Image (cartoon, rainbow, N blue to C red; front, top):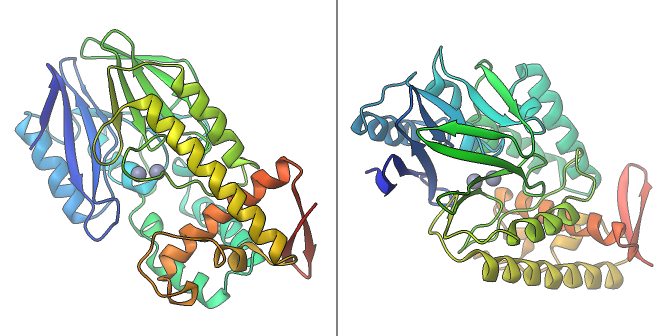
Length: 327
Ligand SMILES: [Zn+2]
Ligand SMILES: [Zn+2]
């Protein structure tokens, strides 16, 4: 059921079955020639049904909307081309756009670069192969095609009497954007800040110190004082205290990663992640489900990259494998 936030502004809950995120919050702005849909859900049947039935309740069919994406991730972008149809536009930051507005071959090449980093960190090849087949980020991503348009930092979009200012907040993805509705005091956060889960911060080739960028983006978003902070998943909350809690979380995780490097010199991120603590129901690192290992190692890499940027650790590459050492 669409939930009205303000006249002409709705939250559309989209279930993500089997995913720990549980639900995506899509938002819809009505009232103009075309409606504007912010984020869409995975390209899979339960998301498709939830999205299009709620659009229908609001009198909208596929092709009646333009789509605004907070970032490239498949749980946000998967149904964008279907929702925009032949005539709609898909808006996304100029930074994240190349990851979606490209050929299937280009997408495969991008994944190969990511996979190579994980392999260099000691992630077992057979696990990487199985990830390739099961990773929802790949199988439920938008297909080739769709009419994309780039947004730059500070650009304003108008829809249904609302003005949305795009704010580039790199970290969760290189081109993550938040959208500021200044008059109403509302901030659409995407996955930059979530309230009862910690946004995943992984390593990106386009963003050599993703965690450093993320921490700067947390300071940048904290400067706003929204009446309503609307996240991409789960319930809204109060922005400033949540930003402070996330900064403290990463400070502690950085310390934990640093101690792991100090005690296990020469280890790669795969091994080091096993020495860090994770909120996952498994007896030990070896028993982590592969998808959880992938996220854990990604998090670990972003913390190692930031420790390197801080000059606290160094990385050597030996026979293709990354080895970290405390300075
Ligand atoms: Zn995301
Ligand atoms: Zn998400």
